[in-house]
Length: 91
Image (cartoon, rainbow, N blue to C red; front, side, top):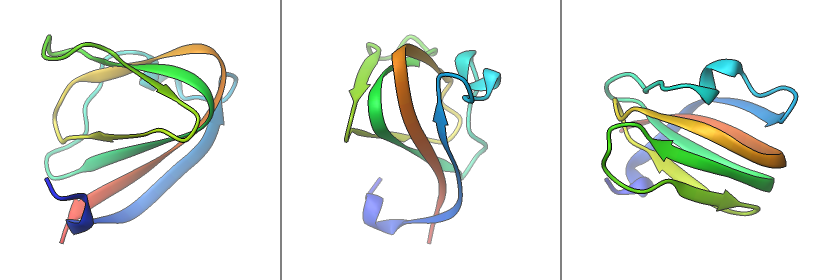
């Protein structure tokens, strides 16, 4: 997927270790046609793929993760952090 062809239609956050929605800590997935863009502002989290394909990704300050539609995943905070999430679709 070419990220230049994605358009943000909603953003949430920023969140920290106290405000992160609990649903993001357990397996979940984005709906068909929806991509996620996780922007790390500070600290670290692990992005864990729950489909068994690929190792967890350690994300730190300044990192960006693109999450494809329907791929199961969850987050594991690694101490204090701040992040925001954008929901995107193809145009």
